[in-house]
Image 1 (cartoon, rainbow, N blue to C red):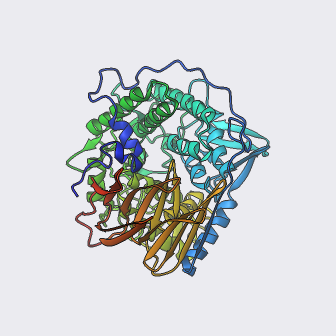
Image 2 (cartoon, rainbow, N blue to C red; image 1 turned 90 degrees about the horizontal axis):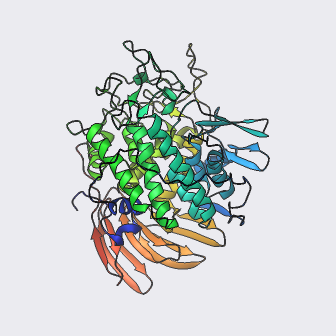
Image 3 (cartoon, rainbow, N blue to C red; image 1 turned 45 degrees about the vertical axis):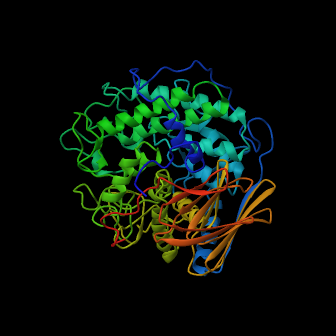
Length: 587
């Protein structure tokens, strides 16, 4: 298969609905500013933070049960689930929230909506609350809090001093499906996302280059990163509460990540508009496409196969950063950009494919610093693993997910340390409090870091289990060295169970067998079991036999290759992402 877009027509929506929505936008970019023109929808009243949907109906119960003959994996999952439960805190009466964990006891916008959406498969009330807590603390001008603390578990204290990431629109959209398409919630979410996008373009386009800006270290959550330090212009402040940029600082940076904020928000607004049938779908899809186009034109460097931020003077900052993966999480890259970054950088052992992969700054970059204290200058972060899964699957790089997931499971299971970050060369756990004096005996990181815990659980479900994704079910059947696997996802009265033994796995809904298939692939169905696609998720070719009802399909499938089921039940290949790069042998 040649590299190309993952979704090209209506039949491909089952594989990548978001890409399809963007491709139905206006064919030619308009002349309106990127900030756009907004509808006049009034803010809805805050929703009740209780164990029901915002429309008042009870939430369906969710749970996950996994058993495997592999004692290493089973013990790892037991530890992860125990530690995850320990990160649930009471923020106010009747308000349970999943916090970041370890020494991070608050709710951050960069981590907790995403973490809540991942944990919703085990506790939907918590997953929903992790969205509502931010929706209900939005300021009148549209700004969302970067962090929320609690006062004696009785009241909330939102903090607006930093943007602190924006990994919120997509997780909040995913929750909509788990709470059974509550349109009260969705209308409220539309209003929140629209107001925040308006705020970004009103304040963070200060130099009118149509590229959104980062003004302080905590806007992107890159604590202590060397790229925010400058002898010439002065270091960036950690936080900045104002709506004009700081003076005597190296910032503002024209930022790929802040552009990603707007792109993901606008894509989600397009999806919500289609669902609500409010007439704004094409408008928002078009506005998202404008952001993606500007990012590609202004921050992408074709000769370097990566995006680079620009400094306050407009010059490129020659620091190769993992934030390219964050931009991919926001789906702000084109397919070609994503393929090139993966091909030339992600699996380069000199840059991001270190023995423990995914450092924050490329390992051969002058700005790289291998500091075990809480520092985004070098050591791989659990939060980066958590984001990379969606970043890769957004662009059809499913086999690469297994490569990274296997590394992560082995790393964490080796010492049982679910910490914030790890040494990229030895795997030693890090992420202790950043202090002036470094004591190696006390700087081994604190166990229980939520993003690392959730990464272990999510990579497991995307490699060996079941994932409910909007109105689809992802059945992932990588073999686990011949060990048996039983993975069951309960959602309300329905149970979606995957059974794997040897080189065969089966998908069952409420005890009824939907399919049996050779391992090495992912089967995609709807919630009722109708098969939409089969995808190669292993790093090698597989000869696959799929039994689907009375039909049997035999095919050879390559890594990342996608086959779609047509209306008459025939399989046809779809454009698929490449699995080929100069450093493949080393991987």
